Length: 102
Image 1 (tube, one colour):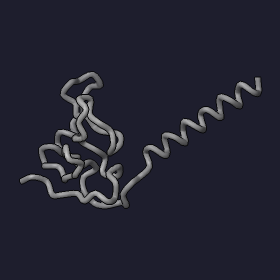
Image 2 (cartoon, one colour):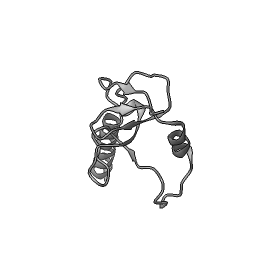
Image 3 (cartoon, helix red, strand yellow):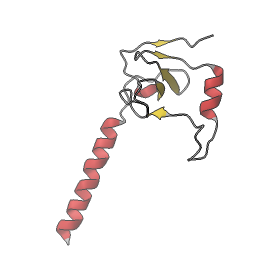
């Protein structure tokens, strides 16, 4: 019984470590809206005021109109593209954030 419990706790620790590694902060803390938009070419830009309102809107879990937010910079959208919304802290520090469109 102790072996089973130990193995279970070990598995939980390994999974927690993987999650912590994958969700680590990639940028120093900076001002700005919580999300940025990653373009098809991998560059990033600030969001427009309308996009910020859209991301602040609450949606039901199965609502097809809800935004797709990437978990990591390298993640692809369901249709295989690089573009999409991403938490600012997940954007690699080497990528400069361009101003949003006017």
